[in-house]
Length: 343
Image (cartoon, rainbow, N blue to C red; front, side, top):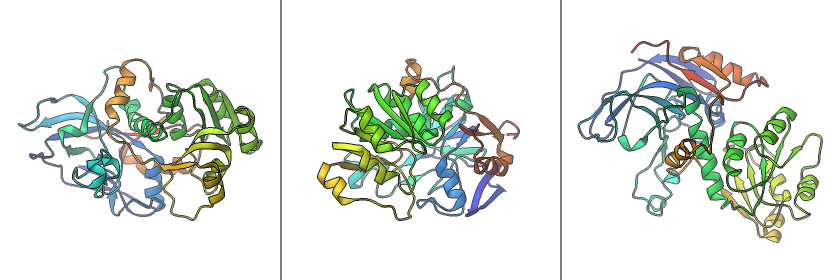
């Protein structure tokens, strides 16, 4: 079967690999139908994702149809449409014991530490499969995974209805966070460098927007929060100076969420953290949030239809990644599809 492998940074190949066989543990065989291209996938391709190991079949936004089930499978059948959990954990270490398997001491993420979804078939445990709503297409369903990341970040931030939230960055991650945050609080500020993305954020529930190339972030945030500063700030831009900007823009007793994976040194200021008694927290992956995300979709509280802007066949993955690197302003989300591949 065909797969897309990052052999080493900046080297992508279409390879032939053996079709997996189900066993007692990996008891569901999934025929892949769609897989998303995420910023972290691009980071693995370019060698800037510190968590990745090589060579690697990447892809962690994974949607497919059940092709075969083992004898011990009770909740799935052939033909079911599912999304696959990207997180695998040991269940025994300290983080797992306190219910935080997403930062398991032996964490293995599909598409990062172990092979992921850019391949025709995957064998996975039944517990890692989540049934998809019938009204959501396979390509749009890849956005459930970014939604779980957004839910996790809002959960880690302990976001409440009374918070004044600042989301820094309005790309795919920031947009997903906005969709979840607006279900929790109404006072939301979104900052970015592109006016069209800020306009979309306003249409999708942001109370205020800031173009940081034209306006001073800290001054505008204070203006929009009656001089206090944001009570919660989430970094969805993850640039070299975004963390220090959020430390400045967040008010006393606030929470600052960082989600970046760069290993490059970044500036911080101890005084900003200590004097305001800020909580600076990391948010990684998601902790069993697929069920919550799918429930929001089924209840009509979250609409993911039409969120994918471009699709490429799996065999044209190089073209897809080159297109990502072009930074074309029309890009919202890119999905790889498997229609052209025979079983």
